[in-house]
Image 1 (tube, rainbow, N blue to C red):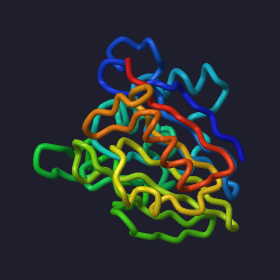
Image 2: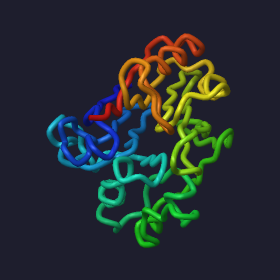
Image 3: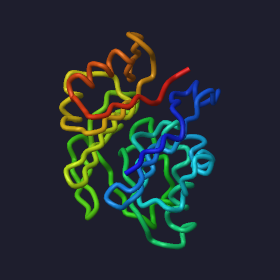
Image 4: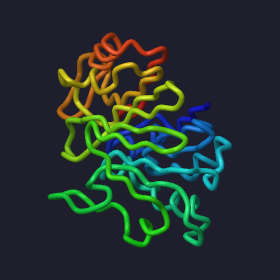
Length: 220
């Protein structure tokens, strides 16, 4: 198993400036399958730059309908389905990615949904597939349907918080994670609504106790 980060930037200002790349990340060879996570602006270009083939994916996960998380999603769906000529893979994500919810979404066309399995994730929803199990995790963020996930294969678990502020129940959603990936926008104690700062992430790591903790999604 290998995780490749296609940039460590996040948020609207890092996205606009590209002082940090905002391509999300890729999980390769997890139960023999490859997954593209939150492919924001530049994800396709960075995939080629870092030597990961966008046509060799089996699933795309989009946590919520903010541009820095979904911008390149339809391109990867086309790559996954051989230019929309084959039925292949699974698209997983928030309700707002798939359909309109209040002011958010949809962030995908009906056409791009049509050749892959579709899974709307909600907190604590569990879906089981031959190569992995996925559980939605709760977030407190601008998009009220936003989700993170915990993905498992043979007892090994990777958790991803996506964009969320720290809240009391957050650690329980990521309990028993072997690898914990957190979206951390600001340094030190400088938290803002809907996002974690590094002090928040330290609290989460201390509660979850993963073998490996990774911060990404840094703001300007």
